[in-house]
Image (cartoon, rainbow over all chains, first blue to last red; front, side):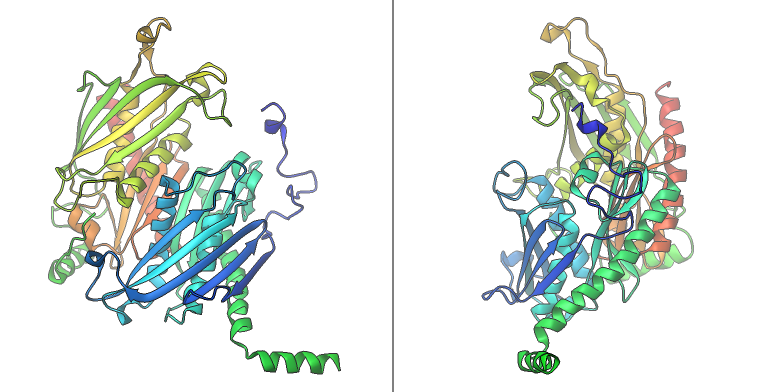
Amino acid sequence: MICLTEIKLIDDDGLRLDGRKPDELRPIKIEAGVLDNADGSAYVEWGNNKIIAAVYGPREVQPKYLQDTAKAIVQVSYNMAAFAGDDRIRPGPNRRATEISKITAEALERVILTGQYPRSSIDVYIEVLEADAGTRCAGLTAASVAVADAGIPMIDLVPSVAAGKADGQLVLDVGKLEDNKGQADLPLAYVPRTGEIVLLQMDGHFTRKELEMAMKMAIDACKEIHVIQQDALKRKYTPQSSVNTNEQEAEQ
Amino acid sequence: MKKTIIPEIKKEFINKLADEGTREDGRGLSDMREINFETGIIGTADGSVRLSLGKTEVIVGIKLQIGTPYPDKQDQGVLMTGCELKPMAHPAFEGGAPSMEAVEIARVVDRGIRESGMMDMYSFCIVPGEKVWLVFLDIQVLNYDGNLFDAATMAGVLALHNTMVPAAANELGDDYKLPVTLWPLTATVVKIKNNLMADPTFTEENAAYARLTISIDDNGDIRAMQKGLKGALTYDEVIRALDIAQELTQNIRASLQKSTGV
């Protein structure tokens, strides 16, 4: 406790604990189509976050009384593996996971063309294998790639990232210690095509001005993440042979 | 929570009224319904409030117990917020384990209060690493007519201001007033068509496209936010919602403080 409160989240050169600039994202790698059984899937490595998302559907609604005669329902189950955190996490649903599942489903429902699949369910499973702050944003980012990978029509992908405040300064893509010791955290998801915010939460302490700047920072970063998402899908759906030929040509 | 279907014609009516700047109950778009409350109504609770916001009615009870701290917060007390949406309060509520909606309400209320710093959790420590006060804030909904976020937060804050720490019963000296000073409040705004509406009723909530709850402290700074429902908001709409929330919470805070004699 004595030493922890002394930690400086931003050094004299204006860099963060992991060497990032205040408005710099952690390295993000996304791969689409990583699971065989699922209709769509995606794996994301985001800093030390390791998250896998799977999509089943459109399929029969379970339980049946939830079905909507006009459109598909979107059900999300966000879960952290028992070994994903510093301490072991007791398996099973908890209140945090329940809340994240709910807001993630609401964010995805906005972009999926649910009207095309009445009486059916689109089930999204997000498993956090290793957690390093920002799992809800990384999970949603991966989940929307998985939905696209499942071939489900949607208006856009949903990039998501948190902005926050560390040592009184606005920072993008809040890291683990910044999350624990920082002053604010603002997870946001943005639909680039429509300019809409589909996930927005915040806790901590922002003045009105800081809040507006943090939102803008997160929106700008979402546009960067959007490109990474698209690349992941392009990589999967570019025919392997032509990729190989290109590489061979390049080598020659 | 069971799904409630609002007839399309009703939605159109609400939209039309909103375009004209009014609502079914005659309120303006950024008006709050009437707030009434009574404190200290439950003898067995250490603090309690019964609050009505229009026809929405909740009871919040505070209970303090002695327990062990969290391993990573050895010198701090613990705040635990629970919410139950029982079938008595609305036909859409079902029995059984807390629903997703109940969990969300509890967590949003908890966050608003916790992040405001209204409770100095260090002052709830008795013996570091061994004994701390566990503060349980439980929300019981009696009648549901929308906007439980604001009603429950208001009731929670009022109940904490009404709480006596049961020190004597735990052989820790005389009972004393729970050390709280601030008045964090939330304002919930829904988007209906292109209009923003504060303090939605049940019908308005179900006709709405998106919802935003904003928690604001005594200085007008933002302490927590939560977007809900299946629609989206633009950046400009969030800014408009912030304007509404900052003004509303400031007015409500003044009137709550006045009626509790602060």
